Structure formats: structure tokens, C-alpha cells
Length: 265
Image 1 (cartoon, rainbow, N blue to C red):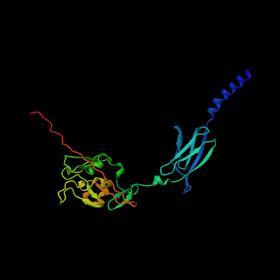
Image 2 (cartoon, one colour):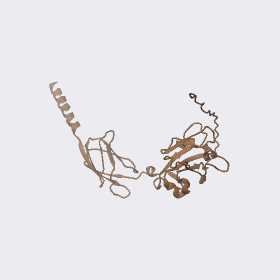
Image 3 (cartoon, rainbow, N blue to C red):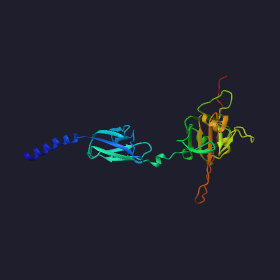
Image 4 (cartoon, one colour):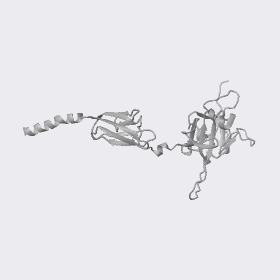
């Protein structure tokens, strides 16, 4: 019996030593297409904060590893790689481009389209998936609070009341500060011959596919001085291939202005 206890005690004494046995891993990270080193790749032990990054030559070194640790390699524009550590001293990792990450959002700029990567100015895109939900009376309500740098307020409760839209603040004390509104390539003024003060009320909110907001002075190269306060480009929905579909929705709402505030004589 004493012999068994001695053996168990000996095994228990060895277990902490085995737990403390940690290894060091060095490696090189290469791009699969060009076989060139990738600097700045994040290398992290999965489930821990133990990690490092590759240097200019694509080399890295990670300490404190144990057998079975999973190393996660991540880099913007490249597919994630996972490697299990089994005690090896050196490894070589190749990373391939991720087409899903490289796919850029197509934005409407002026009279054509481009990608966010190639756009020289500041462009924000709000698609139908990001629109405000609920009862929408005007197109500007779809955009309210959905993009930074754009402030939309209303002075009255009339359905055709023109909203106050400011892109990165006002730029003039006396002249108008509202941005230029472009619907499917047609620029609209805030006061048109039809007498409509709000050009956004001319389009059905349910027909809008996306908004593209041009925020800086580069928009004037496309639309001239009218774009000095920014541009809101509206793209409406278009037909798609497939079986014909018919959708119907109906909402009813009542808007009531606030009562006058009682003031002291």
C-alpha cells in the first residue's frame, strides 16, 4: 500500500512541472499570391490575451505556448488562419486574400458610381436595410440620425414642410445652408415651379433604395456652387430579374402639433 502511495505522490509532483513546460514559437507569414512577407499580422492564442504582431519581414515570435494551443492569424483583407501548436519551433504561414472583405460598397457619386476605396471625398451611404422603421411621412425621416455629420430638424408639422438639413454645420449666415438634393441624377431646388418647398416630399419613401451623402468641398467639382453645403443623392428602387411580385402595405397616422405654452403676463 505504501508503494502505491509513493507512486501517486511521485506522479502528483511531476504534474506541476509538466504544466509549467511552455514553448516558444517563431515563424514567418507570407502572402499566398506573391509569396512576399506580410507585416502587421495579428497572432493571438485563441481564448487568451497572449499575442504579437509580425514585423516588416513577416516574422514573429510567441512565448508561453502549450501543446494544443490554437494560434489565430488575422489581417485586414485576408482570410483568417488557425494553426494548432504541437511543440514545433518554427512554422511558415501563408495567408490568402478574402474576396468578401475586399468587396467594397458601391456608392453613387455625381453622375456615376465608384467604390468607397476610390472615392476622394467623404461619402456616407445609408441603404434600405439601415432606414428608420415605423410610419414614415417624408424621405428625410428615413435618414434622421443614421449618418454622422448630418443633422435634420423640422420647423413645423405640415407634411410638406421643408426640413432643416445641415451637413457638417452651417456655412453661411445669410444664404441658404441646405444641401443639394439629387434624385436619380436630377438636381432639385428647394423652391420649384410647382410650389413644393420640400423636394424630398416628391419621392415616395418606399421607393428609395439608398442615400449617398457627399459631405465635403469635392462635391462642388461635380455640381458646382450649389453643392457647397453638401449633396444628398437619392437612388430609387429598380426592377430585378425573376418572377413578378406584388407588395402592398398601408398605414394610417395622425400628427398633432403641441399646444401653446402658457406664459406669464
